[in-house]
Length: 360
Image (cartoon, one colour):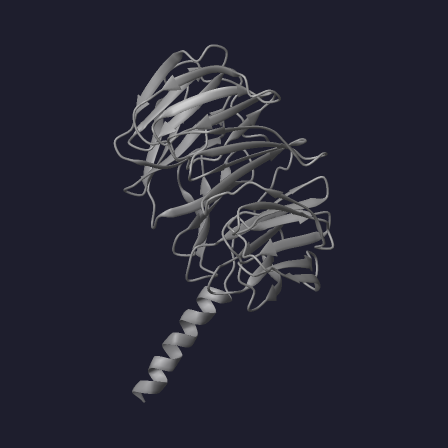
């Protein structure tokens, strides 16, 4: 009898976790831009709420709503104007969502250990398809037209994003690192032997660029440019049409934050608190700012300022033209994440408090 009760409890937990759904319809505004116009004055705290569990990432869907993904595998909607959770909390996985994508009202999610790859319709609030035993590494999902691409350490996979049917599969000799990007109908991956590997949509190798990258890699693609940094302090700027290295730098400090491409500029934040702005095409330094503390989050770009999050608990606004400090906002705790939302800043600290800051 006890075993039957135990089995029933486990079955209920399984059905709640894997067979659940978001019970609130999401109005996705694909034309919405979360970019701040400007934040020239010290922002003020609008609200502060404590979350149920640590946040892994968020997706901005309109001017008042974000989808929150927690390290426990939970997914829920958060109203950025009030800080309230809207509707229920869905837990499709028992681990963090490793990668996600939102396209045409479909939410695509995957995990690294639980192994399902899933497509969920945010309009009808129904699961459209699910593939089992598909492990996906963090940040290793992208979409080109109607094809969904994912990667794990040993394979690249392509699926019809509407039906979930597998289209292509490629085994990888040199294991891949976290992060899969797309640009100009090509896939950009990073191999364990330090190369940038570019594939076509059929998963055939087009070219390899040897960079001797370390295990920790962060990359950003914008237009024809690919910016790559790694944990050993290397920076490479690659011209994608020609697959050539335009320029490179080597720093004494490690780099944990992804580089930022802004118009004709490149921003790099080093672990020692230094921010450097370069001319994107030439690598000529325009200015640098030396702050205090670790930089491990991406810089926020407004119309006139660069907002630098220092993990120890400070956000610094820098004038884009000259690198001069405009204001500094001190937080109560270590900053874990920072986003632009609803003409303000949404940040989460190490104690799971989420805050909205807005200008006057």
